[in-house]
Amino acid sequence: MRGPGVGSPVPLDLKRQAIVRHARMAFVSEGYAATRIEPIAREAGVSTATLYALFAGKAELFSAVIDDAADDFARQIARAGVIEGDAREQLTSFAEAYAAFMSDPFVRAIFRLVMAERPRFQAVALRFFEKGREAFGATLIGILVGLSKSGALRPIDRPSWAAGQLMGMVEHPVFFVPLVTGDEIKVRRSNAEVVEDAVGTFLARYGA
Image 1: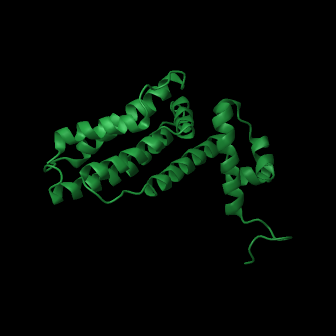
Image 2 (image 1 turned 135 degrees about the horizontal axis):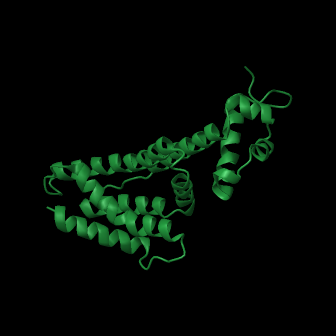
């Protein structure tokens, strides 16, 4: 099959990607109720009939948008490199990546959208939240297990609990406070300060 070019049809997967991309922008900026299908199709360069052939309706399109955002975030998380070094350096590297992700205004915009529509899309909302947290959590658990085996940290009976403690110390000031306040209240501490405090507190509890 020829690739897309002059006079050749655009593959359905590329059309679907374009629809989802423009739908994401529309849902984030306008909300679910106010978003209309026709402008999304127009912006994506497809007919309304093509959009409905790929998505049964607005609810299915919304679910696809949220699942696509979750996959996108998971890819970002996977690219968050962890440097070699001692326990403080490795935990700081991870916490900085987590803080940067959680403080991204677009990430919060997606979470607000999911929260606003959770009564209507509970399964989608839960899947979105858990996918992001588990992707970061799995990375951190791997770090903690490695550091514990090397003797850089004390033996950790429940790495998932320890990971949740460190992530919680980061996400509360950089994510949940702005999420609840709508970014109107500025966080007093910078991401670097939040990370330093979180890692220091964590090492006071688990450091060898």
